[in-house]
Figure: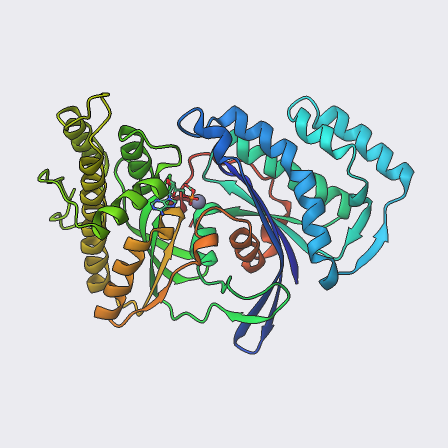
Length: 402
Ligand code: KG4
Ligand code: ZN
């Protein structure tokens, strides 16, 4: 089965085509093409993601990205039939009344999308329906519906967080077109989701069967990284920049006396809270040593980044250990953008070793938002949702749908 994945929940416009097959108990997958267009640079001027800009950019990017995607996937796919000019013209006229008023950029780029007249042998479309920024989600959903009408194939709504769980099971270091086994994971297993919007410990009983064991009560880990990075004068998205400073501090043995809190570390439950950590950094920055030009002292900044990362690492480690002790999990899946962090990756490896867990870490280039994970999650879904109207679910979280 060939699935097209569409991801527009935040500031990445991403598309992917994958093929999956079942042989006995094995599930195999091959990536035909996967592309990500990041808008991060545009949003950095605003210090965070600006929803109206994200919506506009997705509208502009989706059609050219699809063109490139289909060209890359072409060696592995066939084109069955073509849509005649007249049908395509009437289709565009329909789009003009339905799509143009809400999504002028998407409509505009579709008018030059001659290539979509060739129907590729894609079986279904999987699109992120949430959680995420609602205006951004709607562009992806609208795009999915247009293609579904044009190519007469179903659309499957996918939960972004489930995508992060399933996406970590793909071997993305394998070249396009090469079949490989996926989902070689024993259930129940544990998943730790650490992204810009979520921090959750999830018990995964099977694909589609999830139980949230703990979650953040306020800020997500990625959000804390981004906010602290901003306090240190770093660019959005701050997570990667902040972690580079912490790496440098460790390399040169730089540390500061300030000790940051390890929030909720001794609580019995598996919940998190990161907003106090951010506030502690805010106070520390106010009384921090500064250079003559008023900028934060560089060594202090490095030391603070290191201490922040230690506080995050200690907190995640403690809660993970608690979760492992409470469950009979033998595998650990890490998902979400923050899982690109090298220091945290080493900590996850240590915990896995200590508890003899099989660790599933996404390759760094697919730890952030991508459409591969959406396509794969969509390929596992039953077709029951085919006739259900799809609605963007801005704030929905994994626990509310399963
Ligand atoms: O999963 P993701 O791409 O988007 C959401 O669904 O939120 O996660 C983005 C988050 C951002 O907060 C970003 O700063 C953080 O992941 N991030 C990192 C690193 N790379 C990305 N945080 C810490 N260290 C990193 N290396
Ligand atoms: Zn994400």
